[in-house]
Image 1 (spheres, rainbow, N blue to C red):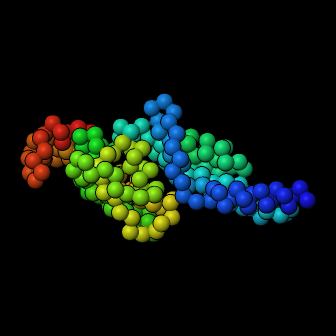
Image 2 (image 1 turned 180 degrees about the vertical axis):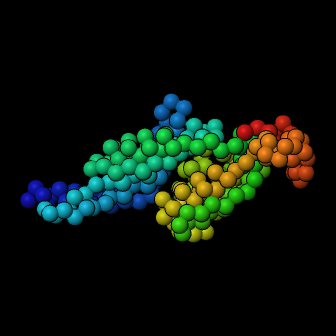
Image 3 (image 1 turned 60 degrees about the vertical axis):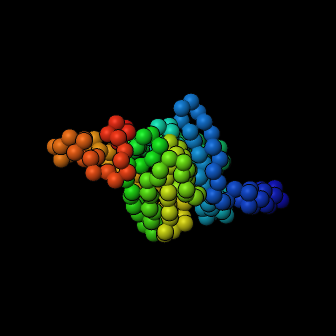
Length: 200
């Protein structure tokens, strides 16, 4: 009977936890966001063994962001494992004026496809679900994001990271081409100053 009660208790926990969520925690300068948590079951000799899988996104709000996946018998332990993995896999993304992207980008992972577009001041973060969690922890304040493929949170997060990894700053482009930064940003249609464009 105790076993049946435990299974019913797990079922109740599943109804409350098995969905996308955006719980946020701050630890020092690192912002942690719980994107998704799911109950998974492994069939063993004595029946089914339940555990929880968590997807976490962490960032410093200044151009560094990472994501991780963790699985454990209890929710707090799964979140801890995912957070540790996320901190180990953080990447740096160049930001323009410390608020938006330098240029538009597309990312893809499996069936997940996302489009990210730089936006003028005051636009805000126009993106939903897992994409918003990644962009906010990264420190972006103005961006437009659209997911056109799978709504699976794992694919969406990986596709968003694929788009962010392709971001380049004018300084990086100038270094590759052997030109000056002023030559690269001189043709910008929005009239941004060289100093603003170099940031990031």
